[in-house]
Length: 120
Image (cartoon, rainbow, N blue to C red; front, side):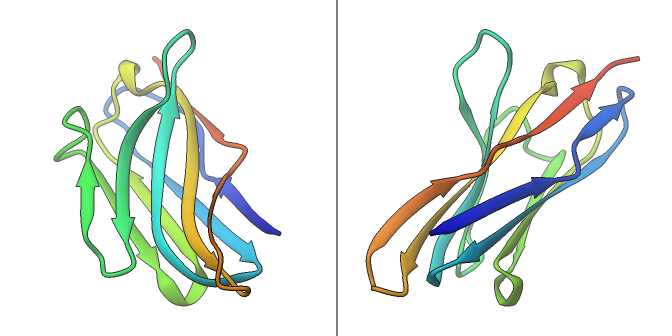
């Protein structure tokens, strides 16, 4: 059993910043990648940013230059620093981890999400 717990969401004015955290715990041998996705009301879930265990990152075009993903492998935690936030960034932000279990099975898991609202 693996759990992902996100935190750091909230209400922020346009142009503001937030830092999201995603902590993974449970029967994890290693984490191959961690990613942040978002789902706005009435829209499909989309990838925001992803980072591999080796530190290779990938971003959606809409957030390049504004968001930065990082991870602490020792803590099994990923972070998303979000700067210059726009109203269109408003969404439920969810964390996804792809990992190998202690039984050496490849699995993935989602967190419950943390709401980010950008509004004046």
